[in-house]
Amino acid sequence: MEKRELLEKIRTFPIIAQGLASDVLAGDFRSVFRGQGIEFDEVRHYERGDDIRSIDWNVSARFGTPYVKQYREEKELAVSLVLDCSASMSCGSGALSCYDQALLCFALLAFSAEQAGQSLGALFFDREIIRVFRPRKGRVHTMALISAALASSGEGAKDAGNGSCLGAALAGINRLLRRRGLVVVISDFLCVNWEKELSGLCRGHDVIALRISDPLEEAMPNVGLARFEDPETGAYFYGATGFASFRKAWELWHHERKESCRLICERSGAAHLEVSTALDAALVLSRFFGGRRRA
Image (cartoon, rainbow, N blue to C red; front, side, top):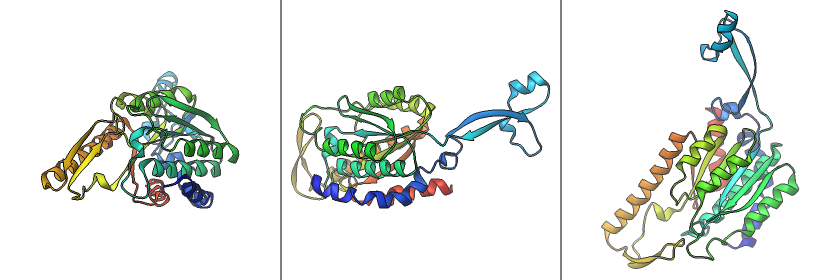
């Protein structure tokens, strides 16, 4: 999609984000993330009906009577968006490339964070970390981040062999954030060696892995002998899409990669969401966050 078309679409997002913000970033991190996003406040005497899991055994042993920990919600958690600008994100079989869809998700979340009164930061990466924005508030800052993301559209495809430093990006945002926050990683996750960094990030923050996919991953059409090129390395091969065995192997490989990503997120403690380029980003995000809020 042309940048002009993307910009026209993004201009409508502040209106859409009004409803999305209440589900995504209204500060109710406890209900959305099942007990995370809260910080220790104080201890008090145990009362009948209190959850025994909240007992502070060290304090109880010291005073000889049971005490429970009290927590409070963190309303001022920074929201950080980690955006993959690598060459593989330029792929796409329809009107939207993976990067186009990632940009639309980025803009929706950015406007939602702004309308919910949250600080917003961002980190862009391809083969290395290319831009970092520290968390700040306000429409001017939000527009600066979206403009930077829009300007980065397609940049990763210019140099073959770019690669993707997802692991370094996750470690980088972890070092940047001093307090617990919400981190949304927007990527196709077409890379390796990022599992350890994701686990480390999840230990201190609420993390959502937002995986961008394309319908071509689910079903390869019969287009005869086709040329396939890796945008990261420039390597290519010719595939006989007319053979059912080739299409089956293609779909199986993508399914296994998708499941691997989901399982890594599950083990690390990150929420996992897949957004196809064929779907409406606002609708997918609303259903995801709305469902978690009601859970």
